[in-house]
Image 1 (cartoon, rainbow, N blue to C red):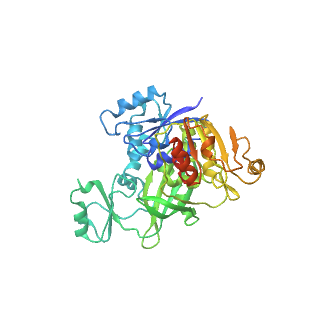
Image 2 (cartoon, one colour):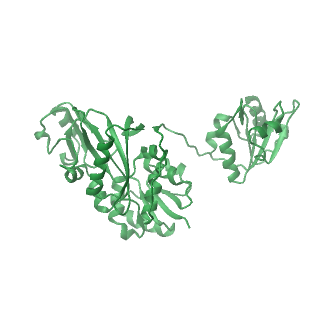
Image 3 (cartoon, rainbow, N blue to C red):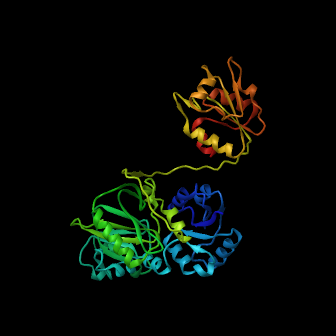
Length: 426
């Protein structure tokens, strides 16, 4: 039987990567949950909405009810503070929580605790307890508890630093550290429940947007050094499952630690492209199943951008679709449209091909391996209107021709789509 895993909050970058990593698994069934409406609602087929925030008074009681109702076997937290809440209450919740221990999660949530734990073992930035003790500017100010470069500030002098802190609760909430101007690296790691570090791989954060690495590539720079640091962190913090740490070059081109996180990194999918599926490995390890890591040897680069998902209020049981310049684009098949047609086959909907294709249609369908895809094929060889061959009951129409779409729309007032609109139908 598949294990039911609740991913919370599922719309974060980590939650979306967990979905990409596990959506085809024969072993796990994903259930997404969020406190606010976000992208996870469009991605997760099984979705629980309006879960209280992790620090709300009714959070744990709500989670317990969700665990019982949905028969949750494990919870996969996707944010550092959320993971700490779950780990500190794992026994009371009544199911497993994917990830490191409560102690490790707590240390990794705080940069101050992390630096204290690893001081003298790994190079860390020079830090100052207060603004009054700062010896050199510019000064980098970052929250002790935080992620994705939120509420950080590079102060050029003391006046700028004081101005930034106005309105913030306390200096104690921040880390004051030396500015590191050089390149930044993330080292993605995996440790099993026996304490073995099974994988560490360094990638350069080439382009960063809102604290997220949107272009990253595997690197051999400082490879041996980063691997040695990974081993030290593994022995000191004893993380379990996927985790990562980040390092940055100082003004003398020396690596210094930024943070350690007891979770997978959003752009760790770079290594998934090589066969290292951190979410899958972590899920198996959570259920005390031994794993091994196998990766391909090619180099990889990841570039990320915003993607679109749509939810249309539309009901239909039949799709009429054109062939040339729609399914067939020159001498290539429209991959997105074919993917959509297979998606609706999974929904047991009917697909009817309606085309004026001038060549040998059966030969073309055979050449492009499309025979058997359609419930019916309507091949028009004269100047008949396609609208004359359409049953509009619970049907939609896909065609590249504006004139054809306009005719069908005018005659039946059904929904019509051009090829560029197909992405909205998934």
